[in-house]
Image 1 (cartoon, one colour):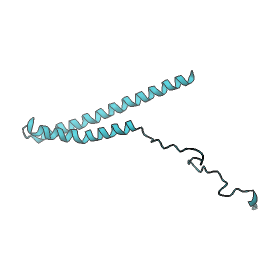
Image 2 (cartoon, rainbow, N blue to C red):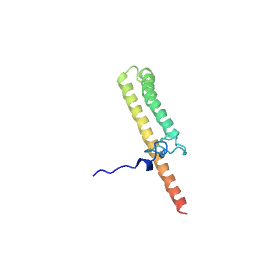
Image 3 (tube, rainbow, N blue to C red):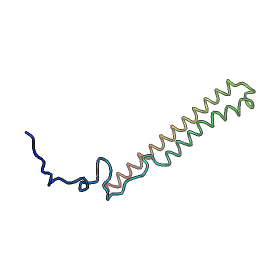
Image 4 (cartoon, rainbow, N blue to C red):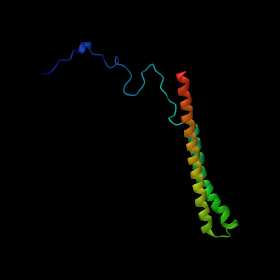
Length: 113
């Protein structure tokens, strides 16, 4: 059986609540802060630049000055330097993650007090 809708009791489109899905209501201020902190983005950009500059720079600085034109050794050094930058980024990321976890645990303890 079909039921009838009583149109006089329904809200019009303008009377309905403005919050649809995850959007905030009209009276609320929307949160526009970035999902990733600015410091994290700056570190990522710095390590990205280092990943480009350090291996290429080490190659061209050492190919004639240190290795007397032997591009194999200079290329190997460039690969090692790329790995050094990568390991440095991993170390910085792990330390940052640990400080975030320590900060959260101290905030949780302060909330309990």
